[in-house]
Length: 589
Ligand SMILES: [Ca+2]
Ligand SMILES: [Ca+2]
Image (cartoon, rainbow, N blue to C red; front, side, top):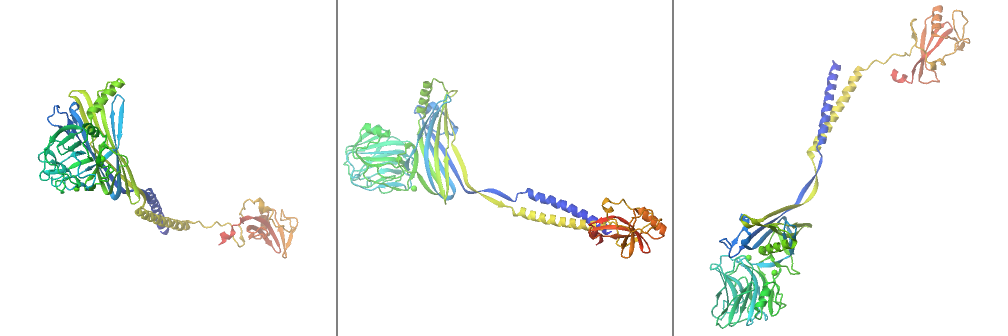
């Protein structure tokens, strides 16, 4: 009954031990620690191209411009393409952000040739038409204006809905000096000079919105002249008494801070003389005329005066922009922003007609015939953002591709690809995650294993104790009678020399006795040669065969059984045999 219960318990603990071992194994298949990448900062760059194709006046299209929504132009109708690229950088933490641009333009042919032009776009100043303006204080070099004088500037009229928008004005409610302005609703541009009472005006040729123009105005006491893109447009006599005075020069609105114009400006210059037609043409090609310069606002990131006259302007709200049509001058500073986002814009014009002409010339030069070529535009925007000791350095390269194909069914076509670009990134750090739930599971499984093993060992011990055999009876401490038929085992060799020398009591009845009996404690001990002989002695004398275990002093731990027969004072003895060695102590406990 008790043993049966123990056995059941033993089996139960064994099963539990195996199960808990399996759980232990499973908890170790799940990692305790894990490396995880944690974002510290995230940022995104977005770039969008937009472009407008300027069409030849004699093109088959009704419109003067086309946008690439259809993705296809008739190449032969496109005069040039104005491209605008809007870039924004957004970061998750406030940062000091520096943005620098480079513009790569590549003309490439499947015939194997390519040409890349790299330019660093220059800055222009953009006015929002609401409240942006630049003012240059009155100075000896600026006022009163010379007679004649020349005003040269690059302007891109964008126009909002306001009726009158100032462009450049040094007048005083149209009474003094000169002014240039736009009229939004009537689509006309007006320039004039003051005669002290009224304004004098002249309508200019229509200027297209969103297009850069090089404009040159010559004011004199007799007439005003206009040049657009270095080309003489006209000259108008006015017959007024030109009143000239020393007044501040305002850009972006009229002198009394009304009539804000939505215009982008670059390279505003005032000359204290009349520039020649050739000088104006050269100037429109970028060859700046230095002679007679009174004011030179380069707008390369600041409104400093490049003329050397110290006529520094003050920028009020206007925005710096990059323009690929305007090359950066040395020393121009990069765009710098503070905050979580930046916006900047790059605009440039592509003369696709000249690229086509170059492709034709290159094909002829290399002796190849190619039916197409591509114009690939790649602004490279380098951004450095510093956030609390961390630094993001990114190079963003959106690609805009114009593919010109000739000899198609529609004639030459021009397709545009790559208007949208997005790039996202993050600054990360690595952290070690410790799974406490896994740790708890492991501890639980350790406890379970420990309990089941303890139970297993305990029940196994108790069970084995119940099963334990009685110790083997090999010897007894007290002398006892030995059955006559008892047959001893073979005597071990080592036991033979333990034999006690027996004394001989001369008797014929004893067949084999030692020759020299020994006297021991008043008794005569006769050694018998064999166990059979001792049995014969016992039979002859009618005495019992006795035995005793002895431990010889010289062999500590050894136990020898000695057989003997006592006959009065004579002891017949067989030395016996070794029955135990070194094991008695445990046996007798
Ligand atoms: Ca503003
Ligand atoms: Ca500039």
